[in-house]
Image (tube, rainbow, N blue to C red; front, side, top):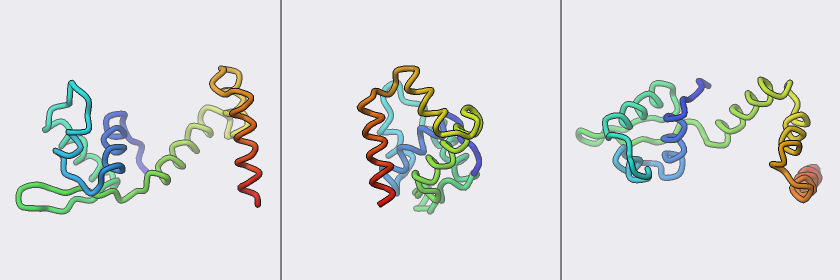
Length: 120
């Protein structure tokens, strides 16, 4: 799975949310100042080239549908983050966020409950 740029990832998040969609549908989701239509169309064309979306022609426009599920992208992205920044240890990642005060003790308790429930 080829890595996405920040602009591609933002467009992809909208496509996952509203698919199937046209460039104009994705553009409508952006806050002002919106990117130019042609810029967004190029970004989505790159997503097609990278095999994240497929295009279906309707007259002189294209309808886009995701090929890669959002959950698959998240899994691959997070695996890369853990591998590259946390010595391939999810424990190290959680420890980092706890030390940075991004996780509370209650959050950690909830995570433990989710893990235990997943083992059932």
